[in-house]
Length: 309
Image (cartoon, rainbow, N blue to C red; front, side):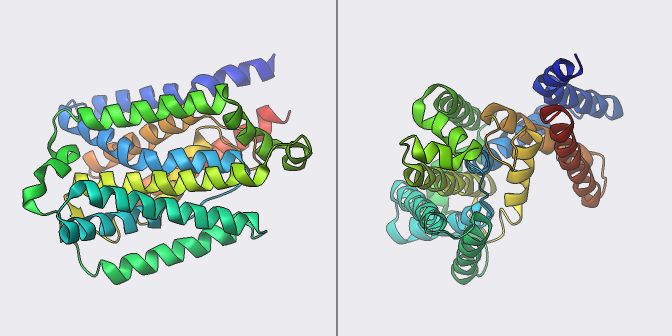
């Protein structure tokens, strides 16, 4: 009975917490649910959500990707650099996405030759940060004649951001739960050796996962650049930990084999809503870090209590 109640709570707890935070924010200040705040939450979810989408798949496979934040930072610098070089947003976006994909392939290669995911992606994280620091000495504004690139920033309501994140979440949720290659990710995380001897190409699955993670992080970096209207080397500094936090709070287990894409995005909405509320109330950023830490520990304790017992 207790286990069943725990499962029900697990399925709906994020929604409950989100409702509580929204109600608390509205009671504390009736202006909290203003269009401006809602649009900020949507844009933040769209940008950082793409970092979490790749991260959660890696965690489900019993890995970790520490490079997503720095890939997003490098993408922010690179996309503006290429825009100025080629005078074409389309070419700049394509080349930036290929760069993110390349970092993902590199991470996957390092993991497949036996380097632990933590060390492999720690290495690619520092490589990405070094390149971002070298190329992006100072923030570089998006050229004014490419105003269409800044649609995420100026579009009200942010329809493009909503469409992008919805299509991505729905597609990945279907892929992860209904398509064989998606289920293999769970199998690899749950029992890698058993998956291997059953005939699944485990190395290919890891290549796909880490490649997508790098690619998805680049999308996040491009969206952040569109939102802030400039390429900045620190635009997503430390956000790999937010992506990991959203994955864990959303129910993903670092032991592998567990996690859901849509819950991860709900967790990201929750984190960004809490951050927006604290900013709105003028509370110090340190309070948000404390809250995030307690949420992570709460999610971990919940997994131990109800998923192993």
